View 1 (cartoon, protein in one colour):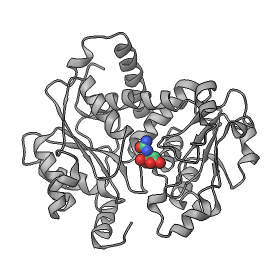
View 2 (cartoon, helix red, strand yellow; view 1 turned 90 degrees about the horizontal axis):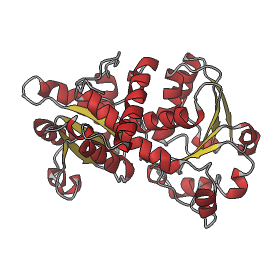
View 3 (cartoon, rainbow, N blue to C red; view 1 turned 90 degrees about the vertical axis):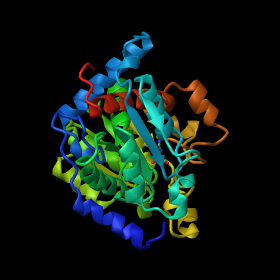
View 4 (tube, helix red, strand yellow; view 1 turned 120 degrees about the vertical axis):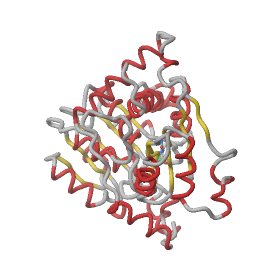
Length: 353
Ligand code: NCD
């Protein structure tokens, strides 16, 4: 990532815009940080997601009416499979529609040099909700800042939901991750949750660690396993301290694996490294194989936000996936759609979920 002018300008919005607390009311709010959620807000989303999951399973015909006539803009300035598709699927399952620039934002006026604020405001003029993924930290804050000013002057006010901003946050991934931990392990209370891999650049682990802290869970231990050069940022440690979360940092997976209830494996974020040599130095530090998994308790669950590369993509991977019910990343993925359905419906002010 370059450290050019536009990037610094975008980061300023972390200070210029303060995301509103949700406080039980999601309608019309921008969703850009897990800091907006309280325990009660999370319970609202999780129970809505669970109910939508049941209703979809039962083919309840009313689900497809919940957001009918509403429009979501999908704006991905970085690669995505799951976040983009699950948001689109979520909106369509609720009966809403999706717009995006044909063939993605790279073929929008961004190609002509348009800035983020103008591109976001264009989508803001057309849609009710806008899902934004962008490589710069603070991009969703910048979008929220400009949309607030635009919304006062148009008839279709728009909320932005972050689909990940650079190496910053990925709030909706954390929602679906915590939902999955609750769903499959009745957590996060009384669990040891081990986050492994790139804790410095991985936005999913940033948001998940902070969200676990904000859930004010009882007797949760977070094990933070990374190469020393990829330790979790101090700002996240500050949040853990503030919420009295017990945590343990190490570069030795085997110190903690045997007492772990949830393993959250991550990809080394190659695209965020300034130097190839720095990536090469850590790329093979943590490789998940059946032999590694066998060092963990029998009832552990293995999560991963995906995409996975060699850190879990060995030929032995099929053993993990096909023969081992402990690998839950596809359940995690499907949960993502239901959590995003719940969030979209709530932000769009749907009462009946
Ligand atoms: C992650 C992301 O984009 O941060 N993927 C996702 O949204 N499921 C994780 C990654 O890219 O490694």
